Length: 104
Image (cartoon, rainbow, N blue to C red):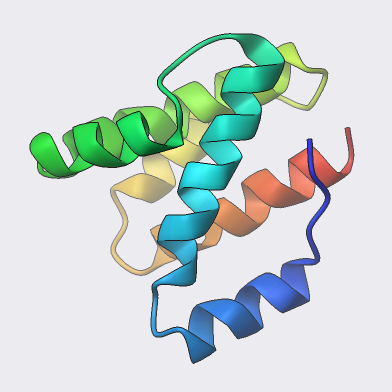
C-alpha cells in the first residue's frame, strides 16, 4: 500500500475544497483491489457509489476495514461503519484508513 502523509492529506482536502477525498478513495480502492483482489476498481467504486446514492460508500467503509485487516492491520471495520453514520465525524475515516495502511 502506498504511504501518504496524513498532514498532507488534510491540507489537500482543505485546499481542493473536498475534491481530493474523491481522488484518494479511488486510488485507495485501486490499491486494495490490487493487493487483496476484492472489490471494484477505483472508477467502478466511484460510479457504484454515485449510482446507489452513497449507500455503497457506507458499505465500502466497512469492507475496506476488513480488507485492511486481511493485510495485517487491526480490524476497525465496525468503527468505520459506525463513523460513516455520524455527520462530520465520518470525515476522519480516510485518515484512519490511511494511517493503518501506512503501518502495514
